[in-house]
Amino acid sequence: VSKDMSDRTVHEERMFERIGQNEITLPGVDFDACSFRGCDFSGSDLSGVRFTDCRFEDCNLSMSTLKGTVLNDAFFRGCKMLGLRFEDCHRIPLILGFEDGILDFCSFTGMALRKTLFHKCQIEDADVSEADLSESVFSLSRLTRSQFVRTNLEKVDFRNALEFDIDPTANRMRKAKFSADGLTGLLMRFDLEIE
Image (cartoon, rainbow, N blue to C red; front, side, top):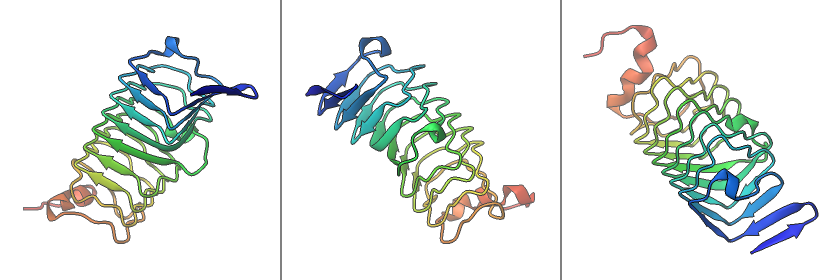
């Protein structure tokens, strides 16, 4: 269903498959309960676009602009999302989930992302400084060189996270969960020899 409301176009409960940025008008558009499969929005200007209760599967959103973009209850599976600045999104409570995605060089600085699922994701060289990730889960996700500084990591589940380096003195980490194998990721900065 598509309709015009004031000066915005609204798409409701539609499936978009294998479309590119030139095949659909994006500025001033609302997507409600829509699904996107195999779409290529890399380098697109998604500024001001509203995605509510949307699902993205095997899409490429790399290097897209997210100024004022609404991502409310958006789930991304198998998506390539290189270099996205999620902190540019509209600051309504973002409800996001990621599975089997590539989020290298993304920035989540200062964002409220409580209870976010990152399952089997590659999140290398990302910046999550000053974000609130409390009660989130990093299940089988690779966090190589990602920056955690003044980040709220309370009750975050890192038990199956891979290749993280987190300074416990620079972050809030009360009741965060780690496996015994993952303790080296907490102690790297102290130049200790662990056997």
